[in-house]
Length: 224
Image 1 (tube, one colour):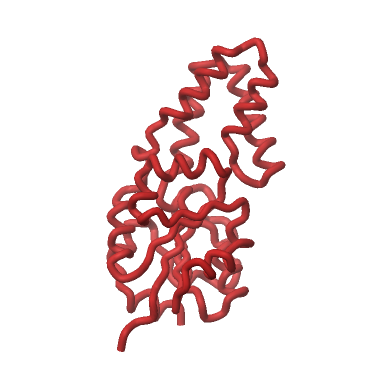
Image 2 (tube, one colour; image 1 turned 90 degrees about the vertical axis):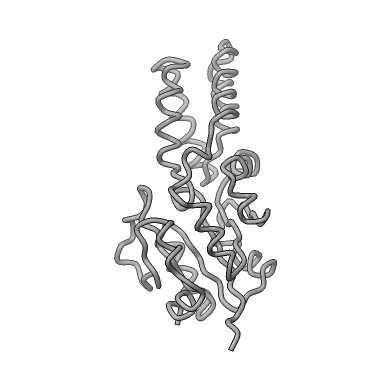
């Protein structure tokens, strides 16, 4: 008997890409470029934008930084150059691309990520992820609220959501009974949040690379 078509919905930040590491890298470099006072202001603006828009938005943060320090064109240009030249591929988790290729050997891989419409797609592309998923990249402010749109675009017998946030995985299981196998990847600073939230993930792995040991039957069986 043929297995139902599998579609893998892959988160990016702290699932395929070490976003905590990216932020740490940028934090150190921003301080060296603009000084401690401006660095503190930059991250305050970063958090303000994130709270307002509920998504990380570096371009908007840069605009507000320039508004705060209009006299410092050089600092603005240095920060823009830093963000535009950062090597995101260096922060891929080990074997992330190989894992995508493995999943694609028996299913369709789709990136479903929260983020701004400018910086996030570029980050994903420059990390090599867009090519790895054959261009299947969907960016939303709240991906869990847009999952029906994703399902309409990528029809499947079973969806496999791979994410570092348990709340997203639990919501999918509640809202779409029998449609999802959920995979919790224990990477990044959100990985231990909502530890008691139900329903639990169907599969839990320490690292994204661990999924290379799974085959189609594993994902179908785990989802019930």
